[in-house]
Each structure stands twice: as structure tokens, then as C-alpha cells.
Length: 428
Picture (tube, rainbow, N blue to C red):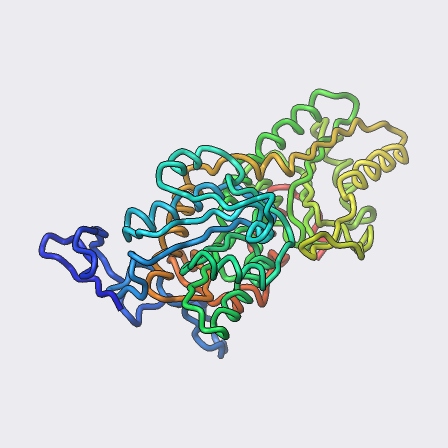
């Protein structure tokens, strides 16, 4: 162990590193935790669940002199990836004064062994301005997980800390690395940083990049309103947003806009016609206002179009084309009424995930990255870091992924707000 001792001037130093200042006014105690399930109601017998509080500890498990680290980004893009890479690197060098190297693994898990994409060495200098750019300087990919080849890289480069940035599938891979390292007696800490633009990793208040994506979606919604209101007759603008299994982006973008007349998400069944049909609702809105705006999550409508049996490299099922389907259904419904609809379809899905993080997500990414490093330096492994009840926590990866992807509660308050804003029929 390498003790952190509080100096008289308030700085914190490692007693093995007299020249290194960590500058902490607050150290996290050994038994500090954050209660996760804070809501209670009569007759509730659920046991209290708590997670380890994230933050700097008074004891270091790793000697900063000997730390080599690796960072890998996997899966789809998300605003804030470069922020996390930057802050992990800067925290290792500036807060802990490591004297080893930080390797950036290029192109996801495959980058551990693919000679076409060799790793790059990350320094505070070459990551200084990457947070102003969208995407990830390391590149990303799906699949490519090969345990033996990943371990070969870890051992040959004397990696002591591995930071894996990705969604639930990527985290399952990270935990396999953790378990294998433990079984083989390798002295390595593995930390996950949850990344999902869909905000569907369970137990967390939100995932990084989500707020930026909701903000970026407003441009598409405003464009859809302009197109619908200016193109006669009976203008309808459709915006398809990301959301494979959950409709958080579509729902929050709808609430953040105030201009949407119909919101369709995977959690709520789509009824086309009849008393609770969405098409008669759109007809009424168009007749009243002259136009209507629709927001649809990409995973909505499987009860209409059926589930695909095809999957991508990460095992995610391919989704039916709900946006095009709704465009055709709206046109057909208006024809049945003896009128013509002018439907404009906008698909900004990749645009909202490739933008740089906004100020709120930039702050969140910094907190995630710093606390991931605090956790590994203290000797924690097999964990992920996230915001739970507005407090930073270290969460066991198996628990985090066991119920992911999470879904929005179709009987919850968020959906009630959607119904109030859009005045669409309740199909639950």
C-alpha cells in the first residue's frame, strides 16, 4: 500500500512520491456508500441497496511509479468520448503523477492485437484539445473480443490499469477480462465507464452524452416543424431518433421541444387506427393547426413490423424501418380521408451522436473519468463508475449489466408528461 497523508497546508501527498501533489480537501472514508433505492412506500419490503462512494482514497494500491494504463472505446459513437479519454489521461499524470505510459487502443477490442491499428501513447499534450471534437480519437468498432490476444497485450506491455469505455456488451467483455486476470493472478485493475447514447444502462441517473444528443435533436425537430408548416397541403414532419430498446432520447427531445404532436417509443405499443389510433390523432392535429410533427424512436413499432432475427457484430438485433413505415401509413391514411398529405422524413440519428459534448456532459465526463482513476488507484477492479441519486458511485459490473438495457416506464411520470405535451392517445 502507498499511503496518502494530509499535509498541513491541505495538500495530499503520497509518502512514496514526495514531489507529487494531489490537492484534495476531501478523502473518501473506507465505509462510505451511497444508498441507491432511496424511495420508500408503505408495505415495501425491499432491502436497502448501496454502492461504494467514488472518490480519492487515503491509501493507494498501486505505486504511481509503476503504472502503465490502457484505454479502449468500443461500440457506437457518443458525445463525450474524447472528454473521457482526455480526463483519464490527465488524471493519471497530473493527479497521481504516474511515470509509466497510457496506451490508447485503436479501433475497439480488436485494436489490442490488430497490426493494422497499433496503439498510440496518450500524453497530456496530445489529448489537450480533443474534447472540442466529436467522436473518439481512438476509433471504435463492434466485436473483435479475443481474450488470449488481449491478455497477451496486457502482459507484454505490463499494463496495470485498463479503462474500458462502452455499453452493456462492452462491459460484459470488460468483466471477463477482470475475471480472467484474477484467475491468472495478474495484478491488473479493470474499470468500466458506461457509454450509451440511448441512456439505457440501468441504475445510473443518466449516461454521458445523453443530454448533448437530446440538445442536438432539437435542430432536426425544428427543421421538421418548418418543413411541415411550409409544405402544403397537410404537412407532416417525421424525425427518427436513436433508441433501440428504450425511448429516452425521443421522449426527452419531445419534452425539450414543445412542438411535437406524436411521440412513438419502443416501450409503448403503436395503434394506428381506431379510438386510440395515432393516425386519427395526427389527422385532427393537422386539421386544427395545418401541420403536425412526429418523433419516433428507431426501435418503436416491432409489434407492427415484427422482430428481426438478424444481428450486428455486437449481437444487437437489426431494427425494422419504422420511420419509412410511418411515412407510408400517414400518406395512406390521408388518402382514405380523400386528401393528400405532404410528409417530410428526417433521420438525424448519426448527427446527434457525432457532435462534441456540451458543457453539462463535459462536466459529467470529467467526473466519470477522474473517479474511474480514483477507483483503480485504490485497488478496486471489476467495477463501473456512474451517477446514482446525483452522487458518484462505483458499481459492480455484473449488477450494472444484469438488467440492461433498461426501458422507460410506460406508466411513469415521463410518459405522462409526453401525453400531456402531445395530447396523443394513451395506448397503455
